[in-house]
Length: 72
View (cartoon, rainbow, N blue to C red):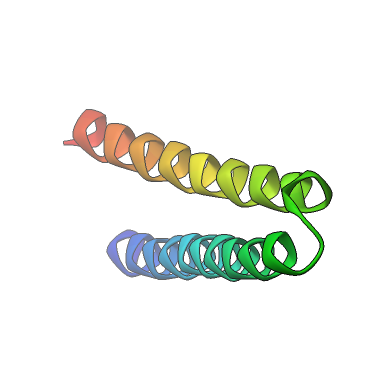
């Protein structure tokens, strides 16, 4: 029973991490469009939000890998 729960948790975690990365990518594309249209100084916050989501994705990935290594 515990093994099935771990697989379910892993699938949910993978889905959440994928959504974070997809939103980060979308924000980056929007930031590029806005910087071409209105200038970089008005789209700077979009780029920063995109980068922070990439950092959050990386943090969650490393944390999950660390937990798996400690669990073995």
